[in-house]
Length: 387
Image (cartoon, rainbow, N blue to C red; front, side, top):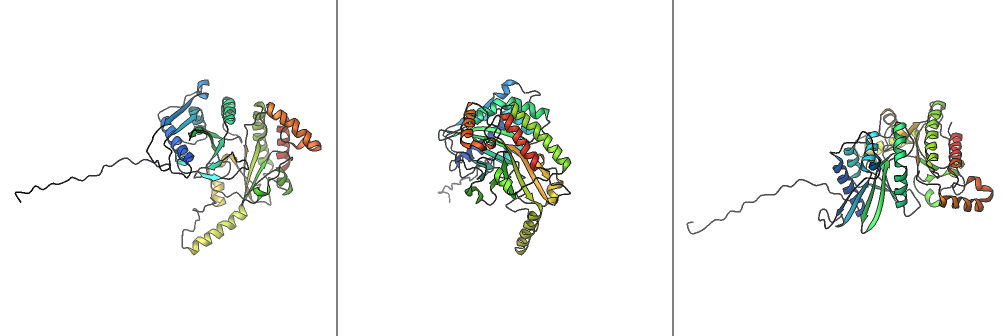
């Protein structure tokens, strides 16, 4: 053995801190998840100022990534992320008790695509936990949000957050393959845990306000004003609850009039408690046959028991109301205003003239009218069909 040298090789494994992988089928969504994680991290050591100043409504955070190799099978090698008004939107999140860590956890998992619009250039997603809606918007929409953001902030503070207006939480520009994409994140009006059985998007107008045949093929189509009338739909809130609801709605609509906005809608989601109970029993029966957990809390439709949903102080509370105790209906309603960015400018004024000529005697039912007229008709329609 003296003439032989024995070489020993020390083997060791380098341990590295685990990095979160932002995996999604669409590279844009992977960039979005990465961007949310990055921008929230950047804000961790930044205090929200006691008073937001004009410069906060013009501020932004942006980063450009080139030749990155991390997670490159699903992440593009070149992309840019820009977050608009980070301190302003963070103030909104804090105001509505959406903490940054919770927000990041919800949006750094792959979002769920939604097919909510016939417009091919508008994509909707909901976060993996169904708490947030992510909507692709236009550059013009970004401009409109910047225009109303100071007044919107003032209104939210003055109303102490008690509003049916959209709850905006973040706005991003994502540049992938040299294409700019704008994403707006807002609260989901519908419950994250209750199945919605009927959906309506109502404006108070009747011209071209019926769901398309294609839309009606969906399991839960988004119906419109004429469908609402044909189905003889009633929102049965009871006198006291209706009075409180209409007071909130009128105050919100006046804000929109002051901002010269029109063409917004009331989004209505209806959960039928009896139908939901039967669905839960059926699901529990199937789970029982498979000798699994009887709670059914792992269901894909997000349904939970009506008792739990009514008694908790959940994230869904601001937009949810229950049918009157004296009503023959046993329903839970999700009610909120959507699509508030349309300004009544020259483009809409021209559309008003054109639609008036085309509609003739039905001109009173067109949606493109002055903000004051639009607001009055909208409120009258809701008031008439809420009891």
